[in-house]
Each structure stands twice: as C-alpha cells, then as structure tokens.
Image (tube, rainbow, N blue to C red; front, side, top):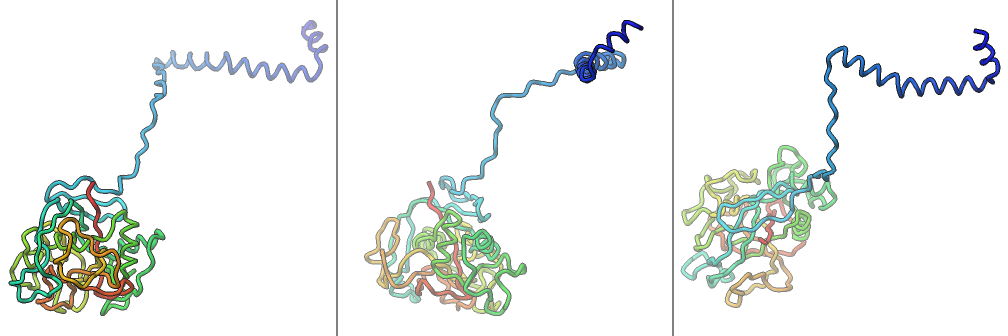
Length: 317
C-alpha cells in the first residue's frame, strides 16, 4: 500500500476531482449498459429496437372550404363550415317569374309573367337565426341588431330561448354584412323567387292550395315569430323552409317600381342604383292574400323591423 500512498500523495487536490469525474464517465459509458444488458439477459426479456422515425411530412388538417361545391341536382345540400347553415342546391334552368294577368290578386309590378333563366346557385335552408347572427357579432363580423326585442318579447336576440328563431331588426346593410362574413351574399329577387316556388309558377312554396296554419306562420295566429322550419309541409320544391310567413326577407336588388317587361331574361339582378331595396316573402302577421310567392315589397335600406329578417345565397362554381 506504500506505493499507493506515495502515488496519491503526489497528486494535487484538484486531481482527485478530475479522477472522480472520470470514474463517473466510465460508469455511465461502460458500467450501466453492461448492467442493463445483464439484467435483461437474466430476466429473459427481449430487447426491442424502436422504429426509426418516418421522414414523411405530418398531415395537418385544414379547415373545410367556405365555398359550396358544384350544384347539379335537386336534393343536394351542403353545410357551411362558417355558421353551420344548411344550403340547398337550386339547379340551373328556366322558371316562371312573376304573376299571370289571370291572377286577380296580382299587382302591376308582378306582371307580366316571364320565363327567366338562372345559373345554378345555393340558397340557405332557413332564415338566419339569432344564434347564427350572435356568432357573427361575437366574432366581430356583425353589429348587434337595432333592437333586441321581438314584437311581444322584451328579450329576444341574445335570449337562449329564441336561439333558433329568425334574427330580426337588421337593416339591408347588416344583412349583407352577415352574408359576406359567411362567404355568401343576399339572393337576387329572381333567385329568391325560384327557390320559393320552383319552376312552374305555382302560387305558394307548397303548391296552389290555400294557406292554412299547417303550412306557415301567418295571419297573426301566433302573434310573433316562430322557430325556423316548424312547418315542413309548407317547404318549397327545393326544401327551403319559411319562404312564406314568419318574417319578410331582404334580397340584394334595388327596386325600380316598374313591371317586368324590361327585365333581363337571364340572371337578372335588378337596376344598378335606386332608392329602395327589395324584400320578399311574407311575415307572421300577413293575411292569406299576401303570402303569394310573387309579391314584391320595398323599403329604404336603413329600415329594420320585428318582422323582417333574411337568408343568404351563394353562386355555384
């Protein structure tokens, strides 16, 4: 042991630190792997080599497209990823727009009845609801409606009890703003009318039979709005709900006050400018004679009311 004492006596103090670190390195580099391998052999445990990581790029989900697909057949539908609205396909083709001179209830601005050709488009199945519009407000895309009341309810917009009811008290500009936020637009008068009555000029969305309480909310039977799509027997030929009754609906066109004689026969969009904007349909207080699909109404774009809402449309690619 004298040689060991002699050797260690000659090593400075810092040298012991170096030796200690070297011992730890050797233990980690040589001792531990051997100990692990020995333990595995003693326990008869197989050693599994991890699979090499793949160099292929990771697939990252992308948001669903906000624009609808091609519209080619009756019965197609598509759900918007923006607001959850179901849109219905209205295929391209001709339809009868306006009222026949044989209709005793027709107004002059509904005549003459003419054949109009439209490209394919998509129409919202329902009026935009309070819940959908509230989502736009929360996202910063829309202003709060001009009033949060309905005709008989002081708390309507923002009230969970009325989430699935049509939003009302919005101006034409606010309706347009919502549709733009949802990657859609207001329908033209012609698009709205075709979606409401089909191609053969029927008087109402459901056909030519007289309106009654099974088909729509009208004639103050409820005294206020109803939840959307509560009258499936009154749906249009394309499946659109509440194209008669419940609330009037803004459309994109300016109103010109003239008859249809000079209207374009292909994809009409109304005059380029005007004083009033058009709204179509009827509302919960409309009498029976006023729920025909051809009726046209107009007011300043700044108007808002407890019986006026909207739905959107989108062109088909």
